[in-house]
Image (tube, rainbow, N blue to C red; front, side, top):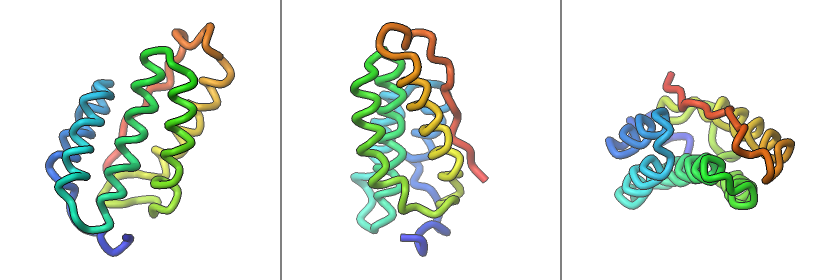
Length: 125
């Protein structure tokens, strides 16, 4: 997959990043899903990984700690194998941000999840 990391992001993925960075996590998920469905090469797993990250933050924003943790664990299947930078997306930073978010979700627990405030942005290099 790393060979495809030098290619350009799908336009729907760019839209997904914009939505993610505006904290429109469900809409970001939808845009990444469109990019994932449009792509036939293995690079499509980049889009699946990022859309899973968007779903993690969607669950957090809805104060669903169990959903966030479950999707976070599933997201690792697609995010961990990716290089640190892929199609200009700083995957390493996204992984660090997700790890910190889930640690905070676990710290806060269901009762205090409304206090969560570690919403990141996806960074392009």
